[in-house]
Length: 358
Ligand SMILES: Nc1nc2c(c(=O)[nH]1)N[C@H]1C(S)=C(S)[C@@H](COP(=O)(O)O)O[C@H]1N2
Ligand SMILES: [Mo]
Image (cartoon, rainbow, N blue to C red):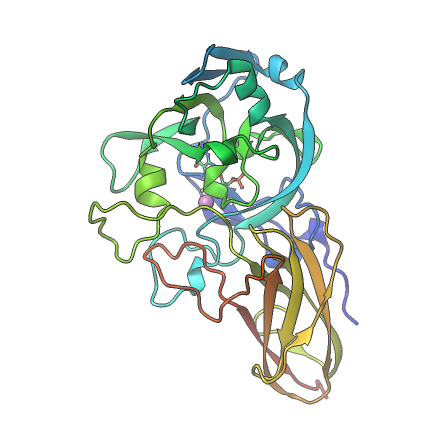
């Protein structure tokens, strides 16, 4: 039998230094909370300098009373804690064929943590949302130049009213029991459970209730499903809910194993409720065998899985894992291609060799 993964011995994978983009090694994912130092980071711009003491959150737009809340104001409001997984929409993009544009994520753009914060609804109730409200816009403090966009762009995303007012959509100030770190959005970030990471705006400075659909660069031109690189001006489908997905965390690609019994391990999640079925094939899809699923901490997080593989004969094998969620969504062999390779939930395949060392 194999050893348990050791979370502390693996470091983050740096994909880009400035702005910082870093991933978590597959080997250290186990269905629990990802240590803060390993939690993946995806920044579009330089991390803004934030001073918690001088910081304020503005709430304005279609509200009865505009508000300005300090860090202490927020921390004194009723709070809740939730395990929530974040996956970058570009995660697993490196395996998309034909190749596509963007940060070359392998499978390391996914992590989960226990977050603490205030419901967005709590804050909006205090401000009093008007009937004219259509969406809620969340603005970050970071800005810069984006390829394909003119001038300075601020990172901002809106949510439809129902998602913004959902009891589990949070303004988070803690991660895994610690103060939010600068990389992950200190002093305050939005947390949108079930949606890809881009919606969870970091370094929040302003929440604005809008009477019209927001059409910012990241929302309407970048995190959208494009058939080709050129935007033809027609409104595109926005990237929103995460898709059902699983990853094999052990063995790794190309690993050479002794003949015998091995515990294949992985994690699985979905933006549409928990994963309740995980199947593995090691015989080219002739048979799919049920794996054992680990405990479910939250419908917004992942669960671990294990499969006892009797690999008695030497040879080349392709291990594949397929997850199904409570809504009945199943991972496809090949996800539908789009220009930026977003939301790739194709079945993860790991080739290994079983070989006697003698
Ligand atoms: N203000 C701001 N918020 C942001 C981003 C950003 O660049 N600026 N990146 C988004 C993207 S694309 C992802 S995947 C998540 C990543 O969150 P993390 O870095 O805490 O893992 O933050 C989102 N929120
Ligand atoms: Mo992302």
